[in-house]
Length: 164
Image (cartoon, rainbow, N blue to C red; front, side, top):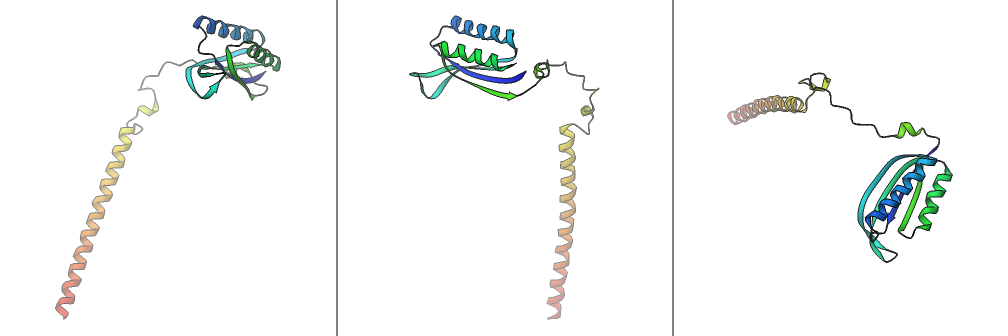
C-alpha cells in the first residue's frame, strides 16, 4: 500500500450536515479500499484569492494508505461534488505498512523517581545553578588577576617616578 495525503476545501456555504455527509462518505470509501490514518479538520480559513467567487473555505486534510485506484475514486468524487472547491493529493511514500503509520496513543507518565532525568544533576534548575556557580568563580578569579595587574602597574609607575 502507498501512503497518501489529500487536502481539500469545502464550500463554506454548505450546511454542517452536508459537510458531515461528505466526510462520512470519504471515510467509508477509504475504509473499503484502504486505511484511514488521520482525518484532520483545519476549519474555515480565508483565501489569498477568490476560488469560484468564494473568499473563504473549510480546509480538511486526509492521511491514508491505499492503492492508486482509491485515489482515483476519491478524486472522482471531488470532481463530481460541486461543494468541493479544490483538492490536491500527494504521494508521501510507497510500499508502507499502514500499522506503522497509525498514531501512537499517549502513554501514562512515569513517576519522577523512576526516571533518570529526576536526579538533581539532570534537572534544568540544577544545570543553570551549576553554570551560575562556574561563572561566579570565573569572575572572582578574573577580578583577582586584574587587581594583581593593577598593583604591578602601580609599582612600576612609582619605580619609574623615583628614578627620575
